Image (cartoon, rainbow, N blue to C red):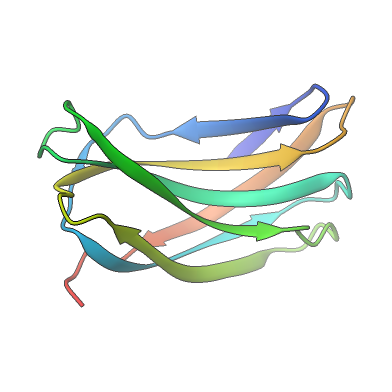
Length: 121
């Protein structure tokens, strides 16, 4: 997936449109990113948690797996960690994003191999 955008101090994200049934607690997650833009300040895999099975009621919060000051060498880099659903979690939407503190030109970042382990731990 390729994300591109412009503006001073912006963030850009792509969100899923599929609601996924999920349980509360910790989930192992990872993603790969690449950019050649030294102005990039963050690469993000995030999740919005919901208290219903259909992502249609109250949002229970969000969590992000990210890297600040991403390496801007044009090569792929992996980010791994844990995303934790609050106690009432029953479903979720996912998103990827990038940010830049002082960009005025187009910022581009690529994402690949997004992984989220929905097994109980």
